[in-house]
Length: 544
Image 1 (cartoon, one colour):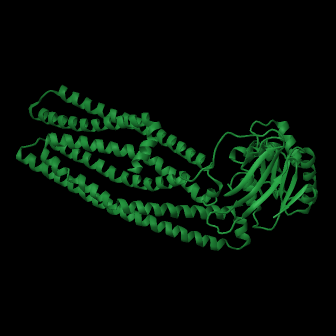
Image 2 (image 1 turned 120 degrees about the horizontal axis):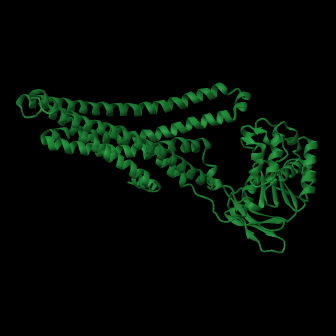
Image 3 (image 1 turned 90 degrees about the vertical axis):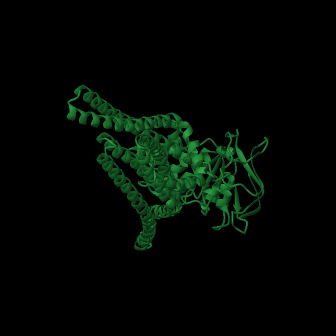
């Protein structure tokens, strides 16, 4: 029932499209029964004309009616197909956008527990499965049910005994479907997990290709992929076996229905109890009973697969979000005060930070130094309100004004440059505009100059130079300086730099530090660094 409620809720914005598809299905079912009725009449009229030389005009009328019904079915199928396709694309895009927006607002600690490969698999494959089930499988299933009901109703009018015998096929198909329902669903969940593992391995291996080559681990990585794909193949094979078995049993029931109907008609004609037209109607109606059953049996697995995907997408949307609110941009030079801050990662026994206090005063330049694992990165995340301390206070303030608790709403006051290459695929201009989409060329040039990234203007394409994935096409030092320029376009006055000069030579590092400190005297600067030269430009040092 939870999946039905999920689909009902999802269908609300698309009720017009779903109504059109259902109307088309209803009319197609009517056309199917109408075609049988017309063909029955056409055969009887043709035989009567052959035997007694009746009116050809009546034969022409029924022939025209048959052609009209065929054309109508073609038109209705075209309309339904168009609405189905457009609805599927719109639903898929809307669902993926909703998930992406949810993902963009999850808490940082929740994010680190999720693998990007698995998330990508959910947003691509699971969204595709659910969208197909919503826009294609469900309308087709309902249409098949309508056609089945219409065919059985008309068959019962012609001969209720044959309708009763034929109806035995229906519970056979249902029982076959129910017998494999739970197993297919469990196998689908296993397949989704195996597929996510394969995608995760591919993504990480491509991302760290140079490292794998340097470690001479490429053959081992390929062997690991073989193992993951073998597991995926095994799960797929199990599901195929169940599906094939179900189709075989369903096919047996279908063939039994055809044989029974043909023999029923043959004996009826020999006894003079039915006409040739009725025999034709019987065979067509049984086919119209069987086709919907086959379609139902083929669409049910899609719905079963989609239930596993819905579970995965629901799990993704249930990830806790960080608090939201309107940005609070303080006017003036901002400082940050931390008092008795404690933080422990979920599942860890030891505090990363314990009773930590420090005041990053407005306009100060502080170097944070210390060995790996001491909590420098955690401190940065707390300053950015990506992590929330379990104890203590973190407050932003401007001299002479009230202190404001740090939160995602105050993040706009901080300008953050992470460690390493953080450029996106696209042009240098597009990367810079991420800092301020409204920035003019003069502002871009000023930020690049302050970040000692004047080299951009000597590139053949200048600001339109393409950055490949992870800044490919540029040196790591060049990418770092462009990332700094991007950050400087932000409005905040707290500059937070994490090993920002790790890829720079000594002269470029000196030039960058001089420009930062002279061009931005009204900024509070926090450097996470191991470089002595950076410490020389700071007014205080925080040793952790």
